[in-house]
Length: 315
Image (cartoon, rainbow, N blue to C red; front, side, top):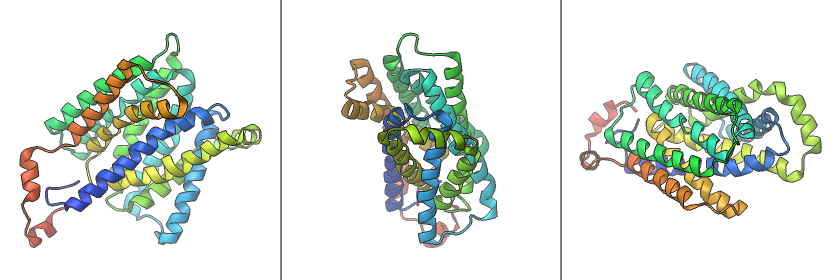
């Protein structure tokens, strides 16, 4: 977790890493819509994870990362099965059953669950600014979801799948956080992605059959999902998560719905309505509030900490 004595450069790098993650995860929604027309949920998840694991494996070899330490294995295994594996399949399947607005509404329960689990299991602090920012962002996510929801486009199965995806996402993030205390972000991401790919191997037959008939654009979108929103974005996420709390990182992802609206507007020509724009603005405002610090914390960060005292602080 970041302390007041954490160098400003480290805080800026962590914020930039979180920003890269949010932008790439937002772009994933546009790519999933294209690839999902040709690939079934399990096949799409497996193809994405295989592309991500291959990319991450190359970087691990180049950096000579090696195997993660034993204390990190439990968190890597849990996050790999829950977040990389189950979450991706459930979300892909859920988005085929419900409209985009309903999916966004249900999945955005995830950051709230992360905050609750983080406070209960990891002892994450819950400062008023974080709670207020999450409340504003959640209201924005609800507004975006309602504005995008189509009449009669939902099913009970789809809502349940999106809810399960949100729970798996939250549990995976909380499980990943302790692993980052023992292993590097690249190790945690690489082996988590590999675990997820192994968990999705039952869909290998579907992937082979569907890849033979899929258009090139859909396959390229699947590869893009593996290389950028998975390999790169999950690594930058892990880097930032290692330097802050799970609750604060979860709140940051509330910027995703606003960016999805913008990207859909630019890439797909889907012009957002006034209510959607208001919701997106609320999402971004809430993220800004949740990541801001009080004046007292800012003053504390500006006070130099003696070297011997800083050396004793946990990182």
